[in-house]
Image (cartoon, rainbow, N blue to C red; front, top):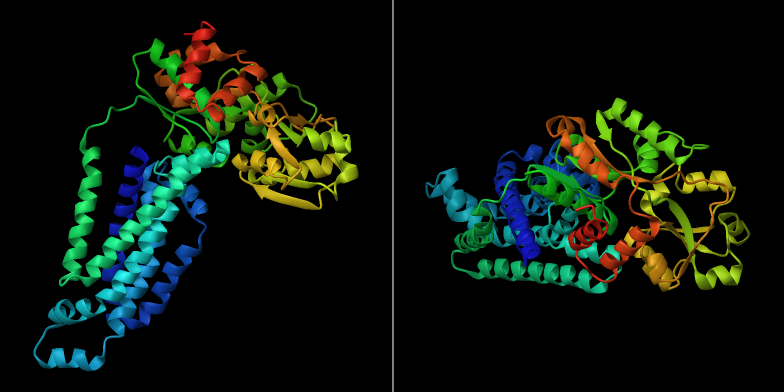
Length: 488
């Protein structure tokens, strides 16, 4: 229910903002027509920007949460309302306008009594279109911590659980249809504009009432990328801190990929998050970890991250969640695959499904794989991380990139191929936090380093399995591990 309220609230606020901008602007353009095409063209350009890219861009300037999501949704909603307002007023018969002027009506009175009422069906059509766009696009806002029904959809994608996806997708569709029905009803009302404002204001008041209750302020915000593992680790940090210090810690998990969560850290929207040594060294520092062992990669990363970004990288845990290539057990036996090099003989027969992040990473992704091993697949599909296992199970791809602690490796009985050329660097998880946070709370270093050298590959894989396939709350899984190990 919370996700639904968040989605409704975010959508309505974005729609109201779009109406307040686009309707007056559309009216103004009918009076200054030489600017109409350029302005409407700019609104059209805004709508061509990929929604995820726009949301990610917002983090740099505004941060994470509902505010950047509302701004992005407002930008997407402008074009239909603006264009329909302009077109609706422009297409009114000039003779009617002249008659109104001849009766002594002022331009403002003519607009109020003649033009807006006659253009209202066209304007409402634009508003209805924008509402549907907003409700659909708002599901992606979950990637920047805005909540909404997208949280359920993203969880379903991560876990390859159709039920979660439907729990998010169906209410979103019903919500869009409900708003479309209400707005269509206002068109038929005698005072359609007044009816529309009444419906919109009432709905907004209803969904904003829960937000009027003061929320407990957090002293520290811990972020996390998509997937179960970062959320489990973030909750471990939360439990350790709250059990030792008088602090209220908030967890903002599911913030998308490395770029999004790292930008949120630099912007100060989160105070820390778990990051992997290989990711930090290769992606954040742009360095090549070839011929370096785990300790060397960590020390180089720790020094580089502090010098370059003024961030502190604490001690890593024991497990190494490195990249790997995996195939199903049946494919491994059919083609006698044991190492990555064995794939070369079947590069034109096997279909690869790689995550977008793996495809984009130059030093430890697909580009580096091609250079190091000297072959490339003839058929490569880009996949969301949560869809890899499902694609393997349905036979759509035969080879995927994976992380060594992923739960689905066990669930789907998959074979991890040996990285015989030692392409992939070590990926040990460790807390990455802003320097000013550690200066303010120096006790954090000792508390967070409680996990240094803890958690094996098998333990992390088991915890991921409990969240992804047993549907156990990540916070409960984190708490159980800490208590079981005597760390809490």
